[in-house]
Image (cartoon, rainbow, N blue to C red; front, side, top):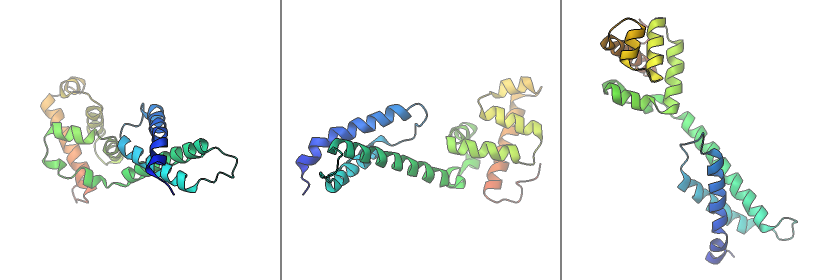
Length: 180
């Protein structure tokens, strides 16, 4: 029977493993819920306490460490897969009614950004409009793009918004999505 004393004895092992995983993934995975990972680790610790067989050659610490690490990795992979399956329409809901700043903020979400970028590259729109929109998404200002393309910043803004609205319309299955 597993007691609270058993859990308390090894809970620091969970925190140590979660922090080690955090250190290894911090540079490129910023969307991990670390509290959730601690909970996953505690559940893995409980299961390790329940399933450990002292007759095997492994020590409990090795057995538990491996179980906790694997549970955290599985959960992170599951979260990533779930995140990739989120409907982009859901993420961009109401985007067409937002200001340019709100639109930039929503598109800056890595998942949305990559899907929008891919859609812009394959959309049947003028190459100049694609280039302006992609440059704008990558951080160029309207003034910089206005100088580069010999037009006003206001016109750059209109081009950008028109392309983004066309992409939103395409996502939502609109009939005007493929016309320039």
